[in-house]
Length: 103
Image (cartoon, rainbow, N blue to C red; front, side, top):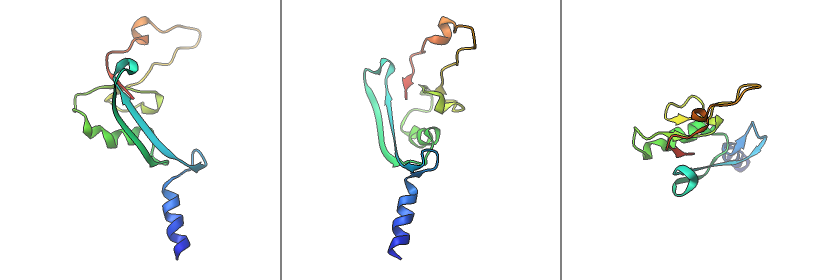
């Protein structure tokens, strides 16, 4: 019976995507990375980035907007970068940030 308990505990930290036991961390900083706003560390590894953010979002004002990487596509509170079109350049407006907190 002891082995089953250890397996269940281990299973929480197993990431099928990474094929190993992992832990997630998230750091939220102000624009330009000057001040750290929030740090979350040690979350079980099979939690996706966007779900991890959604769980911690309640700490911030509902109107607060963020900037994140491509892992956060689909979250209305997070602006994600626009991918450069093939054989074209992004406009300066598309390249610039808009004063949001970064993930």
